[in-house]
Image (cartoon, rainbow, N blue to C red; front, side):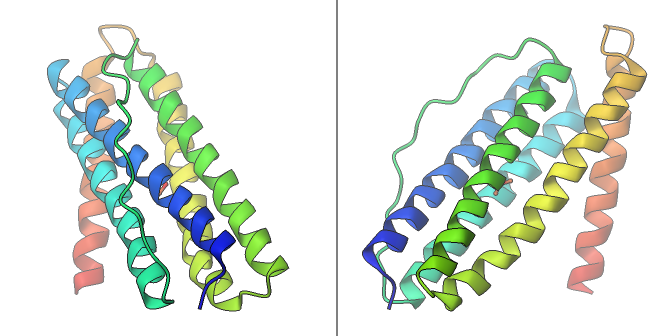
Length: 174
Ligand code: FEO
């Protein structure tokens, strides 16, 4: 059994993860349109991951006899100033998600809700990894530069990140 308050907050987290999924989908489309296929593939993968993050909470709420609510779809931005600005926005959004997860963890402890506390630990770890990945990408973009001559090299770097992620996934499926 989960408290009404915790249920409400987890539903808000569902909405935040759902929004991230649509924001990254919009970013994938923008990258594709710029001819940056590696970046587009990366953002599609991130979008799929966010949907998975959303569904994980959805299923958890059912498991603890709560009620998961499908969130309203807010229109994400469609245009981005540059690839660097796009990744800065991803990083900022991930920081927002981390802050929200941290608040949930604190609340679960206050309520002595150890089940939710344990459940949230997966997200704590995931956020640490996501933020580190985005920082690495932003560092690379800063090194390469993001003028028109650099876009090809940025895309190649992101494609290397995609290849690593695909390798890690197939090792997990093992
Ligand atoms: Fe599920 Fe990347 O926040």
